[in-house]
Image 1 (cartoon, rainbow, N blue to C red):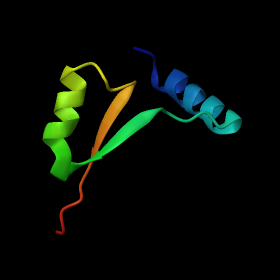
Image 2 (cartoon, one colour):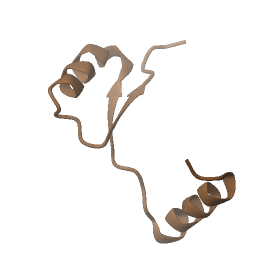
Image 3 (tube, rainbow, N blue to C red):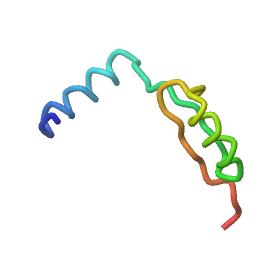
Image 4 (cartoon, rainbow, N blue to C red):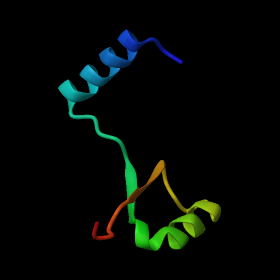
Length: 55
C-alpha cells in the first residue's frame, strides 16, 4: 500500500486528467442479481451497491 501522500497525489492526478473509476452500480434491492453477476465473472472492475430503500 502507498502512503497518504502518494494516495493524495494519485487522486490529484486523476482529478486533473478527468480519470474516473469504472463501476457497475446495482440498487441494493437487486443485491442477489449483483452477486450472481459477480460469481459468474460478468462484473467488470468494481460492483457498487447503492441504497434504494426509503429511510
